[in-house]
Amino acid sequence: MLLEALAAGAVPLVLSDAWVLPFEHDGIEWDRVALRVPQAHAANATSAARAVTPHEWCALADAGRREW
Image (cartoon, rainbow, N blue to C red; front, top):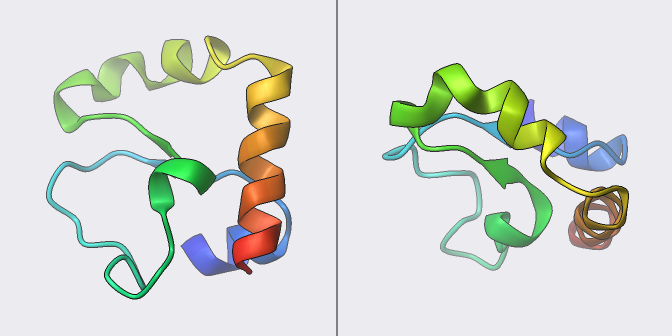
């Protein structure tokens, strides 16, 4: 679903600390294309997403489209 989100121009929300993301070691810089929230803060994921500015959302989405 992560790659499909990038293809659609969406910003994935990743709620995991230990998950190795697809192509993480082969070039995709997930911190540039997804919003990552530590598992311990999963209850605050909505607040974390709301804290992202529109400019930051656009930058994440643009970077995701370039990676795709």
